[in-house]
Length: 66
View 1 (cartoon, rainbow, N blue to C red):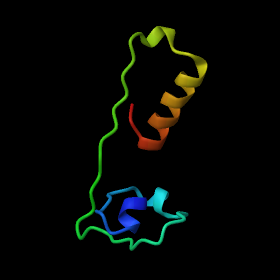
View 2: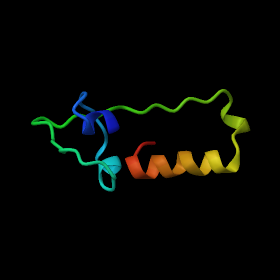
View 3: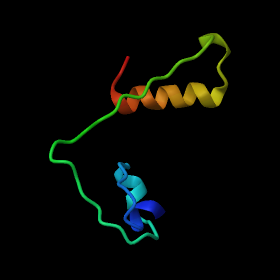
View 4: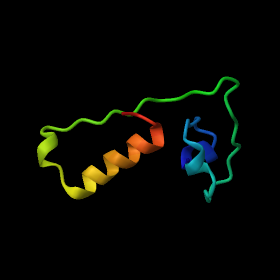
């Protein structure tokens, strides 16, 4: 963002990052919204920590995935 502020390029960043930034930059949106897929991989589903199990359950509920 510092380089963008100095006119040395552009950046493509998520909205959450741009909410509270100390830089003086112009924020623009794409005409067509873009999305990215996030994957989850695990070596052995039977050996997950409780925190990981809770996170997977949270993702299932949030994304309505079974």
